[in-house]
Length: 79
Image (tube, rainbow, N blue to C red; front, side):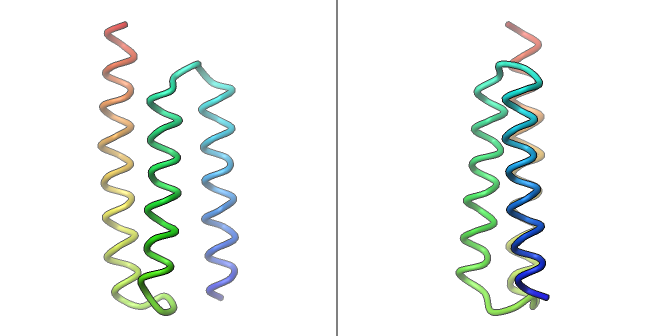
């Protein structure tokens, strides 16, 4: 089950990176996706399995990504 979660996380991140590259030339959005990927990798390394530690860490990654994305979109609108 844990390998399925890793595979889906990696697939999601690759999709995000590809989407950012194809959608618009927005390096800020690409940076957000890369930071999110690294955050999720760190969560996997810090926790064992899919326990509470992983869920809390992953939730923080999602919140950070959403904030980064909002900032990148706002920055893109001002340019």
